[in-house]
Image: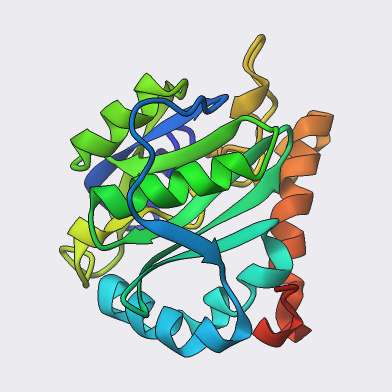
Length: 231
């Protein structure tokens, strides 16, 4: 949850268990090229992606992952010796491409996926990296991404997230409803406040509505299958 959303979630019984740093900026490649190769995901990769995702997240997210190809502009996998060791997506939100989810065997794999997604867009990138991944955060900042905010990782009814955090670099998205953009900070539109949702909608900016439209489009993809992906 964003700083705006955290109070509301705490009222509902959610507990903070960690933090993620929101980074945003124009990615500029630098240093040695990643040794690992990545490629666009295909329908044949679905089973391996779902298996990896459940292993890392500790729960079955088939209902989310199978919607990604229709929602995201890019969906890529990292592969080694014929085995998928990571995957990531980039989806449009206002003037940025949000990188998430980002699941990878290690930092090198995450770097390869981020680099390949950046190469496929002219937009600035935005991503929310678990603060425990110091190496990836420093690497991204060296390549043009800047810290925007720190968001809370929260759970309800369980003390910790299941799965393997060391391979969980960035989530699909942060919790977001609607708030007007702060002056000079259009990137913060689309965050949640504790005020009544529909009352806030009346004062929302165009950018905020565009953000909501992106998320609504994601949840509307119930009939899209992984096979609809363009290879």
